[in-house]
Image 1: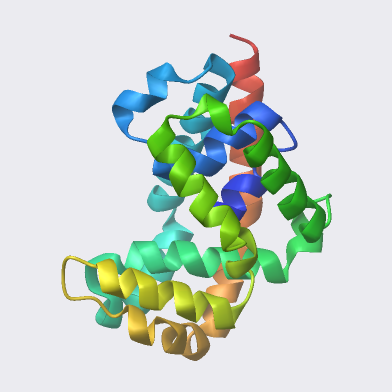
Image 2 (image 1 turned 120 degrees about the vertical axis):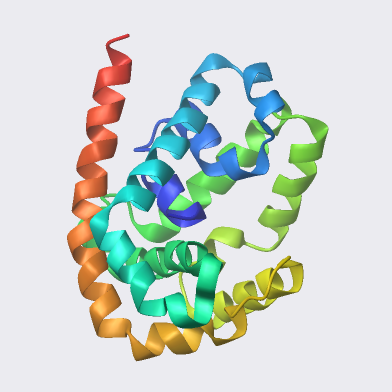
Length: 197
């Protein structure tokens, strides 16, 4: 899952959201410096990623695009999942999409100082680009793919990823619609268990 899904799966807990939404921006040695509730959000982010990567439905989706995406197929699949989440948002998430994005941006601006300066700069950069909205539509996702292609260290097929999205759309969408409810259940169980400790 990517930025949009992590924000959505924080279930309106501001501290969880801070860690869950920004975890990919943080270095491992920076996490212990955060307030404990934010650290919990980082832990949730990592749990979501592990559950997603190990799920058979996700692996099937990865297999559909492996020929052109190679080792980056899991990364591209995560981005596709955000697009499908945005498309089916009202079926899965109680708060309207635009409200969730606005609340997340307000939270990040108001609580920016809990993060190291290096991470604050990255958050500012993302906010200036309305980053969550970019994960909701195909046009902006193409721009994201192009930017990732520029940074890729190995041969990558990000420039044709959205063609793969179109070519395999029905199969990918069906996989997502089966996968996401299981992820929601897993997150709720994780939050319930960690609240007990």
